[in-house]
Image (cartoon, rainbow, N blue to C red; front, side):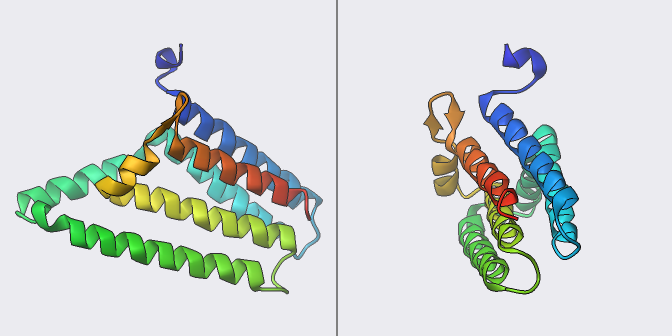
Length: 168
């Protein structure tokens, strides 16, 4: 049935998850004070972009273009070290930003800080998937029921954002 719509269970989980996170952030922005509202609006925009990314698959297109470029220049066989460096760098940057949002007291309320941290983590998941180190892909694309692990990660992150939106 989902094939008729050009989607699969993992994409459907992602679409529903990020639609819910976007709506939760918009509601939180509407109900928040002036200090938190801009943060919630930004988080709504980012989660909406995640939803659009699931629909478009742009991260896969970027990956394919980079692979084609590396193959054309004879660099493809040496990509593993670069991919590992990029993945470790992305994870480190994500952790720094997550800590920044979690422990920065006066910028926004605890719900907005928690949602921002989760959003950074989800952004890192998208980025690491785009880099596509085969060992990481083997984990992300492991099926758990009809949905790949990455879909469940999206759902857990979006659920965390929705929960954080209630903590205003």
